Length: 225
Image (cartoon, rainbow, N blue to C red; front, side, top):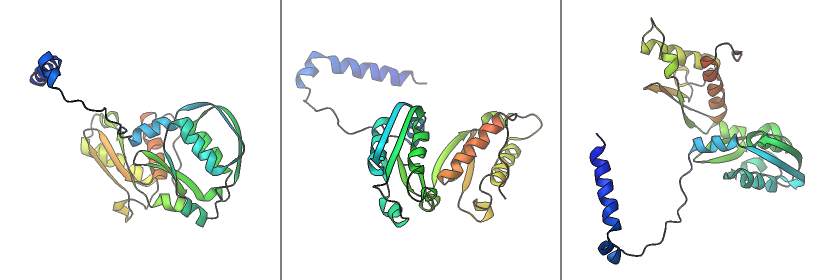
């Protein structure tokens, strides 16, 4: 029961409001420490629609900084890795877009860089990190997916359904990269929540596949060759 906690909280509030206590209350400054940003919050910000984006001959480094400001999200760039891949931070960006998601305009911006096919971005430690796809492939993320509705099937046990879902994911998404196959990715289920540890690109594909599991009439991604 939570009632004792509620009563204690109420008593503490009354104690703080007591005039005698207020006289002896030390003066403290409010904390200026920023609140911790979660990866889930960053994903939400990537879905934010920006009303207007105008880049005219804007250096790549400045365009990225501006997108971070517009999206109210921290964007870090691994310039050492990008420069090693011949990506120049001074590359000019031209983009004039309206009512577009931050994720989309970020992709449009990076697509204009030199060797764009080598560039990618991921979410880690509450921020967006831009680096080479090779570097991203070696960085693991932990994401949790709600699959409790998929486990409510008559005639099949909980464990059987979890095993079937995990096998489907390992077969369709980045096959050969999961631990049972000798790779780095892993999955575990608890209370209808599937925790997946893998790189950013694979997490995006897992999210899409689970969404299709919830809506089976939609077209499913083809199995990778």
